[in-house]
Image (cartoon, rainbow, N blue to C red; front, side, top):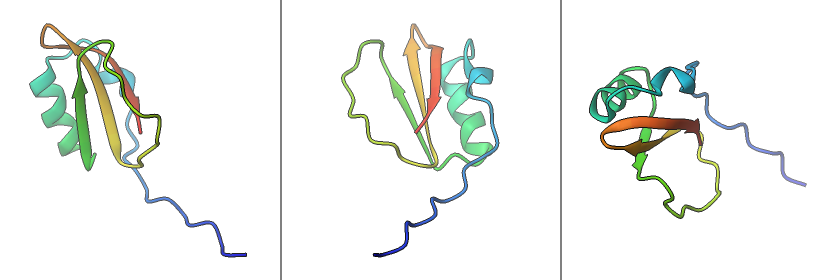
Length: 71
């Protein structure tokens, strides 16, 4: 059986720190902190549930991050 690959390291960052920030500033800050992919989504957007290491997701409403999660 093949070994399970080790996922790449992701930034040691707290997603809750982005809640309440403006979307543009939050995205810039996330990229500066090492997130390879930053995704902004409107509330209620249908998304797949695959986990992608290095990705940070923002739920943005009226230009403000309302929720943030990894993967």
